[in-house]
Image 1: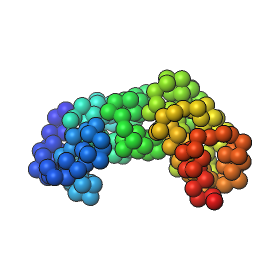
Image 2: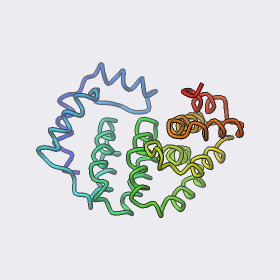
Image 3: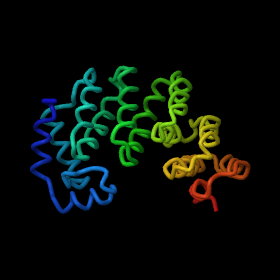
Length: 222
């Protein structure tokens, strides 16, 4: 995508091999990096957007596909952070496609967790009538990362959290042996406990959660 060419040049200029090696190791060698730490990366992308603007919203899905095809992980960070700036302009269908693409491609916690709370969370706020249909599809997909998004998209909802939905997802996935599912159950419950601690205590008391999920859920309640 031509729009990204100047940014690729900037990222290449700021690349640091030592940082890249450490970042790759931290991500268990799933991805390669330019080696640009977050403060410099964000400063660089801020200057880039100031000069070149945001990509057009109608090309949002094309843009996210291009950033996800790029080898270095920093480009995926740029893609998802930039899409967040466009959420009010994205067509509904493209918005959902973006969430699903970024969740099911090059999947790892560093991008999926951002997508869950910053993109999926805003998508369902904008289109609440889609929550039941879309999350039912994601839960039935058996795709671990889509299921994690179902658990985490309400992280910032506070008193607008749909308690029954959250607890229902936690119950449905409670038998999962996947670390990232068990961790997400606990994280989602711990976050909701800041708003409704008694509800979370009761849920944990009644549902035999995995040890990790229970530990995470009760971390600030004990």
